[in-house]
Image 1 (tube, rainbow, N blue to C red):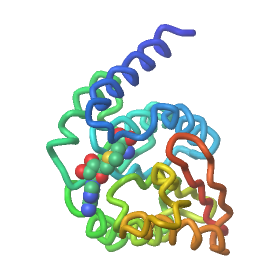
Image 2 (image 1 turned 120 degrees about the vertical axis):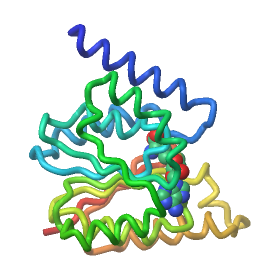
Image 3 (image 1 turned 30 degrees about the vertical axis):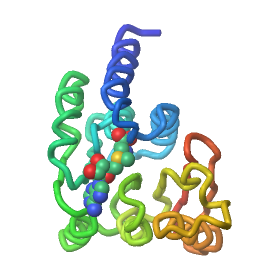
Length: 204
Ligand SMILES: C[S@@+](CC[C@H](N)C(=O)[O-])C[C@H]1O[C@@H](n2cnc3c(N)ncnc32)[C@H](O)[C@@H]1O
């Protein structure tokens, strides 16, 4: 392994460790998966990482991007994002990541108003589950044909298969699973790693 690769791994481990206490980042195994997926996908242009939190998945993606790759990282909390920024800087990828603070539905609408529809290679959705259907629809408009939408936590810790669980958040994710499974706009697969990750590739 090259020294630079080792340094990257150490940084990933460090940011994961910093976030672990809050138990809110994407499962650590997703970083390498996102990286591998990106390397097969990215033509070297734009990429959206939604919901930065402490920056773990944004960092994993930024490391996989070519030098001219760009990430728009959305989050409602400047406080969380400020934890990740120093790690992006130490990894030399801060210039690839544009942070937009605010309710993500509004940020995504703003991106469309700016003419970003059909332009992103990838959208990664990992925020409040209540708005997940809206994020999925917006992401489908923002990614190009052939682009990928990734959604995390599609198992909800197993609650989606518990018929006695009908809380709002679980129902939103359960309904979205059913919707995507029958969605003719995408090729899709629900990968059983972490808390369940759906890959949906927009058809051309
Ligand atoms: C599970 S964390 C994201 C973890 C991140 N993908 C990672 O792996 O490091 C969810 C994030 O969604 C953000 N969030 C929650 N509601 C939001 C909203 N309405 N708009 C934008 N961001 C929101 C939270 O502030 C939090 O940082």
